[in-house]
Amino acid sequence: MSDTPTSRPVIENPQSDVVLVGTAPVGGRVQQDVAEAVVANWRSAPWPEELLSLTVYVSSDGTSVLTYAQWSSQDALERSLKEAGGVSDTAAVTGTEAAPPVPYRLYRAVRGSGVEDPAPVAGSFPVAFFDAADHQGARDFVDGLFAAEEAGEGDERAYPGGISANMHISLDGTRILSFSEWVTEAQAVAHIEAVWEPLLKELGGTGLLYRHYRSLFPTA
Image (tube, rainbow, N blue to C red; front, side, top):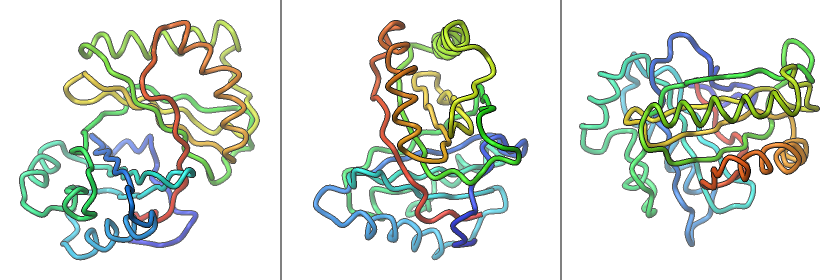
């Protein structure tokens, strides 16, 4: 593991089969204390070979902690989830009212052309969750969203500060995770307000709209 602030999970890592994503409300606790409790728990247990990366993010409004774990094997993840006190039990570790983490697979990822190559280190990670009826409904929603964006904005995606947009679908098909990478939060907010929010309203995707995170303890 590394505490290097420039270390980030490679979202499109071809070795990553499934990701486990959890969010924990901070409640009355200090946000950094909650995040540090998660990291301390990760470091107290043996590191499974199939666990490729673990990163904890803190929301810029100070109310939430998000964990993003990449696994090379769904079977290995399922074994970990069955272990009492395993690294995935955010609620038990932090003492918060965290819902169980949800396993996802990356469905579609698009890169922005408005940043230099290689892309700069992301400083802001807008996240949103949406409900879906099933896998086909989830795929249709994501495909429709990107198609509507391209129809209105073009497919070059030359947005200032926009690095990538990564759409995940839960293994049971009932949840969609939008996880984006931006250079700054201000650039992300401006884009979401100008482009994504109108599209989402048009498509009826109310969901839980974007909460902005920054990486606090990246590990790899």
